[in-house]
Amino acid sequence: MRQIKIGDATIDAVIEREGPWRRPEQFFPMYDAAVWNTHLPSMEPEVFDPVLGMMVVTYQTFVVRTPHHTILVDTCTGEDKGHPAPFDFPGKERWRKELFALGVSYESIDYVFCTHLHIDHTGWNTTLRDGRWVPTFPNAKYVFHKREYAAWEAEHAKGNNPPGTVFRDNCLPIVEAGQALLVDDDYALDDIVTLTPTPGHSPHHCCVNIHSRGQKAIVTGDMMHHAIQCREPSWCPGVDWDPAQAIASRRSFLSSVADTGTLLMPIHFPAPTAGLVTADGERFHYRYKRD
Ligand SMILES: [Zn+2]
Image: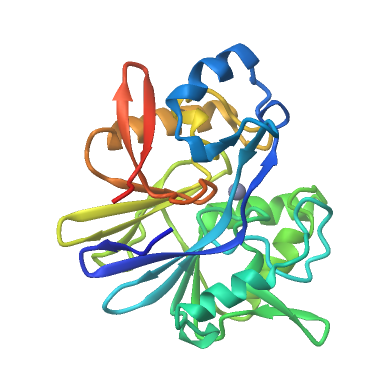
């Protein structure tokens, strides 16, 4: 993804993984081949590899730089976590190298926002040092929704997996280090960065808004994983916390941004990633912004 400019802010992508690797029939319980094939010609070609029959799914972090702050939004799966495949894979140093190539050091990060506290959005939050998980970004405050945090804390206490070690290794050490900001729906960092609650995929999933000088981009986290969910907003991945709520959030959100010029930045959409939504009756189109 080329750098995006939103008024006085810039947004860059730092990629941990990309390419075709997920089969839609395994990811979406509602998958229907006839429906998929009907929509395929209306979706951007980057989102599916028809030869392999796999969706192109990226893991990336957005680096938002405003006149006041350097911010990361979502932190992929991270290193040394000991997760089962497909969440651990070789070559994760790509993420570090891309971050440093932007001129961003770990020490220079002021804030880390996690749209939700899943395995592929919290990984680089922490680093293994002398056998302990410690915050990777020593000067950052980490912004977690307080009820999202509480929900996974409760699941962890019950021994439920997921999140398994995700809460213990990626989230709890941030709170123990005193670097967490546990916030509510209406949290605003300043007049540039705010939240929009879009619950369902996780208990209190939030999108992160970036607005400056009349322009707006929204990092949509996992409000949708693939462009098919614009064509079929009722398709949910099997991992959703509350599918009915996820569908309601997705429909409401997509209706609110359709035909407005708001730039969406879905974490898992492959490059060029950033795009615009247009309405098509009860459905939507996702169109990459290519200029
Ligand atoms: Zn995800």
